[in-house]
Image 1 (cartoon, rainbow, N blue to C red):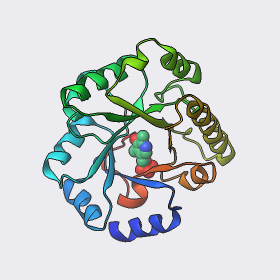
Image 2: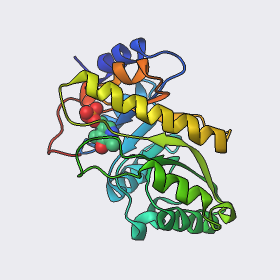
Image 3: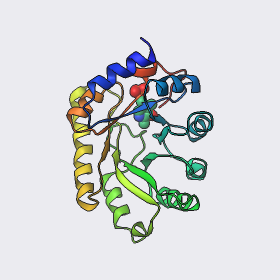
Length: 221
Ligand SMILES: *Cc1c(COP(=O)(O)O)cnc(C)c1O
């Protein structure tokens, strides 16, 4: 099946309330363009340099989401254009995003990445760490970031009941964050292997790569 057919198939399965982020890491700009010409405008990358290179080359109305781990010293490269950063996992990083956004007279949308998987290798905050950030006296001073919700990745496992429980945990963190910041409305969870379960558990944004574009050229995260 072509990229266009895959996109239409997946989109037809998504409720209107769920945003599709088409994950194009390791894929060429030509392939991104093919998806764009089929009507997709929201794309996700996990490496800042790769995202910047594609942003430079491709139509400027594409909305670029940074879904990977963010190194503070690279925030400046995406600050002029990034549409949503999914992987915020420290106050230090948030402060750097705020600083770079201010330089470009922008407000940058952010999600807190929450650790929900059993593996220790996945990035993200515990709920206690999230609560600490929200309570920090510096947090309200950050005027150039806009917290929109949370993102998480379930364990790499076939056990769907475990994946479901991890999504339920993320949903509960999302609900508690919403009590503190009522504008919060994005619950980013679900990838190629588990997006149906994620949607059943309340996801509002799924990040799908291989089901649209095929296997990646090298193993990305
Ligand atoms: C690669 C990646 C995805 C997409 O994974 P697929 O299994 O190819 O759909 C989603 N989220 C994050 C954070 C990723 O790095």
